Structures are given as structure tokens and as C-alpha cells.
Image (cartoon, rainbow, N blue to C red; front, side):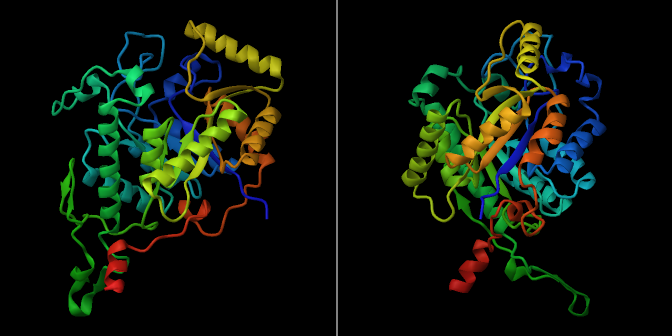
Length: 396
């Protein structure tokens, strides 16, 4: 049987090009309105997109990595990703919703309950994109910690103790969240009026997590949600984040720029799984692509050049920018899946223009029939795990 290609779409403001808001198809006046996000989600759902990711951060967007800038010709400001997902949930039926929620400066208990609530609101379609924050100006928003200026060169060399600490903290945060998601067994709620018992207290569990960064007793205040364990995802570019994904996530987004790099990144992901001793299902791996789509290659190139001119410089992106026809994008996706990728996460350079092109021309080229079941985990072929605490009781 042919493997089903996973197609995700990443939503961010007016689009992934910093000048997207100036494109005639853009809706800059609507960026902070419920209708804008609901309509994008409906377009993606009708097209058969498997899930949406929603960008977020603890500071304003910036053209400076891990810093702030003074530009006023680019979109600044965004709505909270978890709340956007909660807004979208009631107006969609099938599409997965994966907001970005940062582990740095946030409390795992609040992260766990917020995402569990989204899973209830969406009837089992929630996920989580884990992200860290190492920017000093973002730390100052909270006032509890001070961070040194971010050393990008050290981070690229992977000899930054600070970066390692951020990702170690993220690993602990995900572990706390996952334990809290399991802290209620599936049948903990009884609702037996005759015996006046609403809950079986023996099926709520203290997680008793003690680590370098967190000490959390538990249990959660939120019952176990439809998926039990939500789909956890991460974006990774090198060994340290690959190891976080291998330790803590179900799915990882990566950013290959050609076939040779795509093959080497896949091997790096599998090597990271070996280093951390990952058990069970291997990571699902999706390649990120920024897309500018038009009916001819010349028109797509011209559209990208126009955006770059408005920006004052070519757009910088961690992911490959594909400016071409829908047919060329289909070919690129097919090449990635032939190399062993589970699918792609597409970042429309212009919302809504490129999302509409994806919906009309690209998605129909792939088999979009739903997998068995209705939850995001089921859609992507993941089993629903039992609570670890229920499993421990059975084993005992």
C-alpha cells in the first residue's frame, strides 16, 4: 500500500515573507480578527490538510535573530497561538490544530491544562509545537531571569552551554506536561449519583516530578483528554534540537534545501534517536518549505522578486523557498517522500494567495482520504497510549 503523505500548513500573520502584508491578496486589516483565522482554517480543512501549526513567540517579530529591531514596514504583533487554536476548534471538524507554546518562562502545569482544554474543545485534534526562547529582551518581559546576549556563532558550532541548558529545560518541561496528561486515568470520572461519587480518587495520580528545572507534584486539574497524549512536535535544525525531538516529540520539522541535505538530515535525526535511546515508534519527519505559487515559473519568480523589493532585501529563511508552479511543488514533495520523509509542512509566503493555490492545485494531487478515526493521532497513524500510571498499576 502506498504510504499516505502528511501535509501540514504553517500559519503566521500575513504569510511567511516579511513583506506579505503588502501583496494585493493580503488582508492586513484582518490579521487580528477571529474571521481571518477561521477562514484560513476552513480553506485548509476543505483542501484536506492534515493539520495546521500556528506561530507564536514571547516577543515581537524581528528581522534580527534573538533580538529586537526598529522596523515599521513589516508586520508586528500577533495573537496568542493557543487561543487562536481554541477559536478555530469549534468552526472546524477534521483538521488538526498545533499551536506553538514556548517552554521557556512558562509553567508546565499551565501549558498542560491549556493544551488539554484545546484537545477537549477540538474533540481530539490538538497538538503542541514546542519552542524555546533564548532572547534577552523576551526574558525581560517576565523579570524572573536574565539571559546573556545570544551567541549565534556558538549556537551554530553547538558548543553553547546556554543553548544546551534551554533545551534541557524544554525536555524537562515536556516530560512534566506528558506526566500531567497521564495523571488522570481514562475512567477516573465515575459520575455515580447513587453513591455520591463523581470521581475515583484512586485513579488520580501525583506525578512527583523532581528535576533541575521543575518540581511538580500534580495531578492535573484537567481530566485526561480525548487523545490521552497530544501530538508533540518540534522544529529542529541541528544536533541539540534533534535530540530534544528524539527524546520528547512524536514528529519533527526539518529544513533541507536539496536532496543531499535532505538525506543527511534524515540520518542525523535517526542518529539522535540512537544517542538518546528512543524506544517505540520512530519520529515522523516532515520537511518545511516556504512556497510562492503561480501558474508559470516566470510569474512565481516575479512575485517573489516583488516581495523582496518591498522588503528591501531577499527574504532570509531557514527553510527552502520554492517559487514555482503547483506542479513543481508536487514534484518536490514527491522527491522528499521518495527519500523517506513522511511529508511536508508548507509555509505560504502570502496568505491567503498561496494557501488558496495549495488548496486548489497542490492538495488534490495527493490522496487526502482520512485515516481511520477522528483524532489527530489517528489521522497520522499514531496509537492512543494508555496512561503510564494505569499501566504501572496493571504491572504491579
